[in-house]
Image (cartoon, rainbow, N blue to C red; front, side):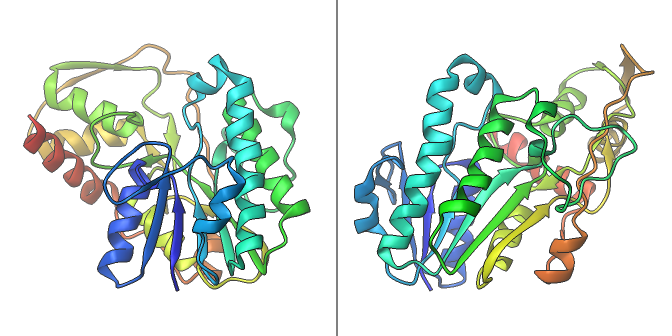
Length: 290
């Protein structure tokens, strides 16, 4: 079954396309950027229906994904992230696609207490969101629930993704690079933690979600909470470096804990990359890039 991929030139999109090709799955990729192997197209254009093969799995990654960009241009972010999503769903139905997989985010859970666990059945309260990006993803989810006329819509709420890349780093890559290049590094609180997830595990989760029916939501997140202190200690061990860690606000850590039990149970999926293995891929990439 063909995968029709929006945002094919994104970090996740490139890894997903390569994985599909390796397993022999045909991929049709579109992106706003002109690039070899991708069709340049706007997800808001109804004509993309003509590009979607009948029976395809539509994987919708394209979005304005950096919160700063959304904050700077909220109208543009809403237009692309919400109206674009509605158009992709409409085009997919018109083309006779079998399924739409929507890349959402753990940020739709809004502000959370450090001791909370976020599960998919938790009601979404937009008044607890301080992020324009999160708001557009929450609205996109609800629009798909209400208007998508497809056999299956699968919403995947991504955890914080990291991996080998040159830009748009998460805290994992940023802290790792600081350990790599500095003798002294500073964080707010070493206990700040997320269920960080490697890009390869995100991609395997997307592929595991193919073939679902109905409307479903799954968290795609790492198996365990990883603190900034964990990143520093694991990076130091991997690189053989001894760095001094300074905490500017150690008494106020931030913890977000989106549970992945539902995805593990229903998708027969689980992350394969622990922190040490994941950081090794970042280390190799940075060593070869320098």
